[in-house]
Image 1: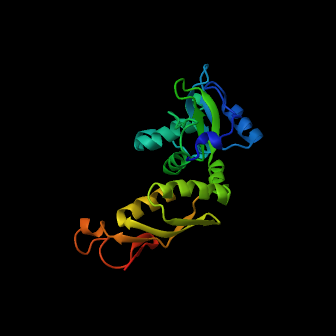
Image 2: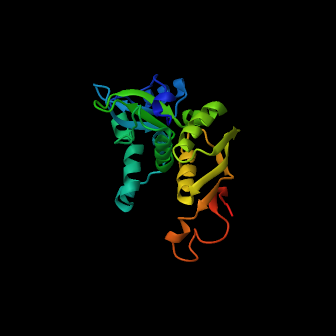
Image 3: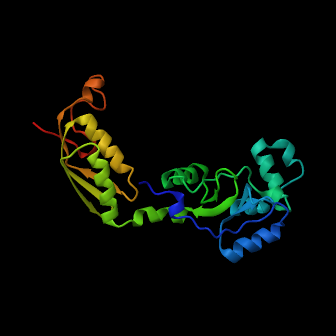
Amino acid sequence: MPMTVRDVMNRFVVAVEPTASFGDVVSAMCRFHVGAVPVVDGDRRVIGVVSDDDLLLKDLDRRPGDLFLEGPSSRREHRKARGRIVSQIMTSPAITVTEDTPLRRAASLMHSNRIKELPVVDGPSGRIVGLVKQSDLIRAFCRPAEDIRDDVLQAVARHSGHCAVRVEDGIVHLDGGVERRSELRAMIEEVWQVDGVVDVESRMTYEIDDVSRAVSAGGPWGTGPVEGGEERRA
């Protein structure tokens, strides 16, 4: 089963209220060595986030008239740079996840939004229950080889009963055969989704190529070497 945020999240959270001062946020981040703090209302619902990037906007060089000459994005940054309390500095709405969010989804959100921490909220209420950091996601690659192999075997069993599986340093080695190439593609794609897999080395073979027939001649699945280390049986 794919790992979720619940498996790696920290339930100790440093949060601030929207009325907290700039100095209060700086003190909290320095004291607890965090790069961002969620902003919560009176019911502990997440309404925003203050990150070190938000705080560093204070260093922007501002001249009279800038707000009238610059674009909307720059004007927002300058307004935040002049903020004195959290509600004026924070980024809102906050990007959040729940405990059931897959780690891969959390990693994708962090990457696409260029953030390193995500508040974890209770789905129905929106109240904060924890925090997940980018460094926490690395734990997916610390899984024992036996656990990875067990999950890979379950994935393989859904596509082929003739496959030997070996896992070394997160690299999955597959050796065996399936009837159709489409089955092999689906199997390898599913193996890649197993948490902790670093790479897949396949020596799998197939009897029937039902993939290249579905594309025009010269397409990516035409004649020549096959992707993913697949081999065709003569």
